[in-house]
Image 1 (cartoon, rainbow, N blue to C red):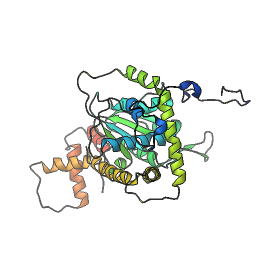
Image 2: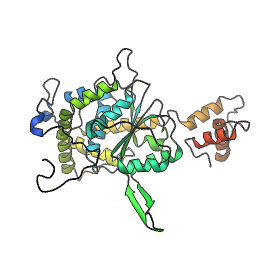
Image 3: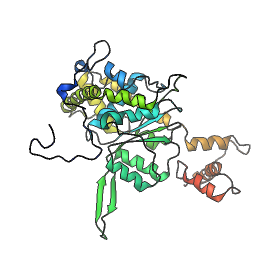
Length: 362
């Protein structure tokens, strides 16, 4: 209803936009788009129908690895519906969109923001100051970081904490002892050519999407892509709201079902299994979780500093096989391989040391 007509005045944030562009009775149009398959006939809330296939996955070319295309889409719909239902799970999954330049990875992450938050949503650079990062995760529900390469250690730690939940602590101004605690609320997504967070501690909190390079002559301007999504936003939202109601029903009916899972994000896995059990595809969901777990482990080996250091060390002419080393000595060798010898610029060496993915100590 129009603001204030019921005697109550609502004050909205400056960047607030309604989910629908007009009253529900005026939206109209078909929600389904392929084979006369309308979303009010959807029986599986996490399976993509023709409507979502057209508007969310059109011209998206996934590089299929450990997960099938269907499993990828189920995970992405899970991610999107969890965004719409804050509090239904305790973790906030990190979405990593990886692929070559021009593959559409950044826009795919931004697309979720356009759907849920409106036309003003855009990707942004990752801050280098931890406090700036903390300000973003307590003031936003969804943040997309574009074109990541290396992530500073302090920021890596906070990204990890933001997934499983953390409080930002600040001293109350003009006091000596009082503290202000604000919980982080942002769900994060990032785009990168190479995995910027290859450590298993990050990978087992992530959904990794690998994108293929687009064929030459098929590029479309971002402005046009944004227009296509926003012009059909009402139908997308109605589709997702229908699925959201199905999810709420499933969570209520299966609230006593507490499975043991093999992925670090236990509440997300439990969410998925409860929905699947309610809708009759639990075995498929278990296979999906097995594949997701394997994909996370495989992702932790991509561009991993430790693996790279060992490979460089073993490729040197000075390497000797079948030798016994203490953990301290092995660490010293691997650090030296990655940061260079003593003749290099000390500032450069210190920077390389700081950017290593492991702690570089015993």
